[in-house]
Length: 119
Length: 113
Image (cartoon, rainbow over all chains, first blue to last red; front, side, top):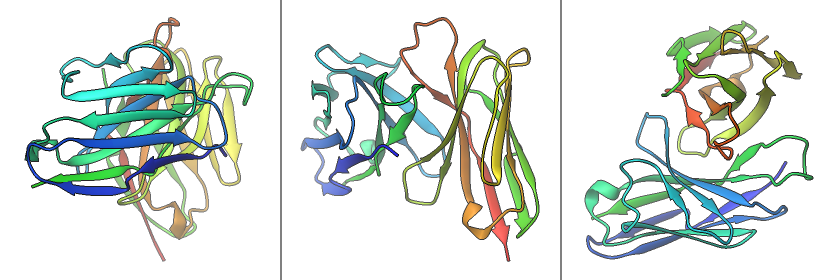
């Protein structure tokens, strides 16, 4: 299956600092990547949709100035949590949607996730 | 709206069967099933498209009833490795979702020896 990587796998930072999380599709091109956050024992909540070469589309209630998304290439999207606060602590997961031609349908494959802890 | 999964949790002994349901109030284009183990990312199981298709892989299969906007995941002869939280992700029909998935609240499956 398609492989998606995330870096770092975990990060601990002080309140007020910014943290960048990378999401890479390793063996396929992904025109669209999605960013989710997940709180313990809860479902995945979509934060934004990232399309290569265009601005990200944010879900209602997600601050675009706080969660900066850049989709620089067909294999890389980054999420930067700016001025992080303890309430931003969560499990952040990206997924990459397989571009047509790789498979017959639009499967999404998830990265391993990044656990952010803000002190 | 978030699709509704049932049951919320199920406990099995190895070898038993289970069914997990996913219902949506919206017209759907596709349903995706994932399994997530504690502390890990969700792992893709299968995708079903509208048209009432069914799919299977080894002892895990699924169906999608387009008329009812419901999907069911069938786990037969469960193994210990099946334990985890199962999520369905639904993609709305209409062509404007760009692949966005809305996930159900999850079903916790525990398989005991």
